[in-house]
Image (tube, rainbow, N blue to C red):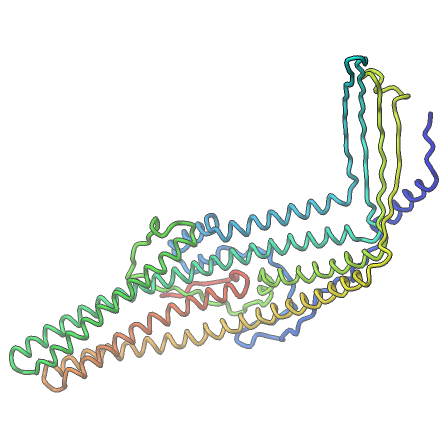
Length: 471
């Protein structure tokens, strides 16, 4: 017998199929506008309107520093860093949530099977068999489910951008700690040379004291200077150990199981900026992408809250077979079908739905403001590092000039002391000035490297057309 469908159910079904997915109550999404400068203030190239492009290839930017040890450590960070691992897991969770929300757009089908045996001392044994298959579906009449999926998708993209941010930050931190460690190595080498010079000066002073040429205060001053210099060497040893421990954690190892050999002859290499630095590279910053996706997520939230003003409809249907024997379970007389629909609508909530819509709109305004602030901060970061590289390059040349001059003064004053023309206080002053000048030169070189790393991070991870400067 052909089943007769009731007219109201058929009407609801047809109307739902026609309307499903046709109405979206979320506002039309637009990326917030940002006050964008025309050109770089501290470099060459023109700004463009910021637009997320965080999926562009960044390359192994750490290779720009031409240091095999750093490159090896960077590859370990990619695999073993636990902050990166946590961000990878968060991204996987976000992807799974998107799949879960997308499943709500489709019907849900269930199958049930039940077999019963009943009887008693004075009752015959009876058997019953029942199987049923049912389906239910909520048509997305007003875009609530679609906006929920869109929000989840934006959350997935946020997690992806956050993963890129964590990876970029971990690699930047690795580079900073590695250069700090190598700075300690170079300074320890310089300090060892300084100590050797102080020891020679002490021996000269003792010889002159024993010959009755100078007072014992000269010897005491030389001894004090030598002891302080040895204490400074211990400070450098402590600093190096701290950097080494930080690197161990970044590569996912316990500090006790990690060590880097000292390299006092390590030379500084600083990447040279290309003549034209395209501002489009700024679009690769993952924090910009994350902030923009948060705006899109907040926009979808408005559609979700607006949909609460309209009814939700659920359509269901089932086919059930019941029989006393398994053989009769599939006969026509054992079959029964059912179709149904359910409509739910909130009639009075004292303005709760309107309040939630207002919250969603305010959330959109907040996300848009945060996005603009992120973009403006990105502009600032790039300009800061461009001027830092320019100034530090000039400072390094001046520090080098000052160091050469201080070395000459040190030697000349020592010669004059041996000739009895000056007191030992002038020797101490000249030696301290020379040592400070050498340390300042090393610090200027390391600062240039750190500024280059900071610029890499400001641009979202590297740039194209690079050359490596001579040490």
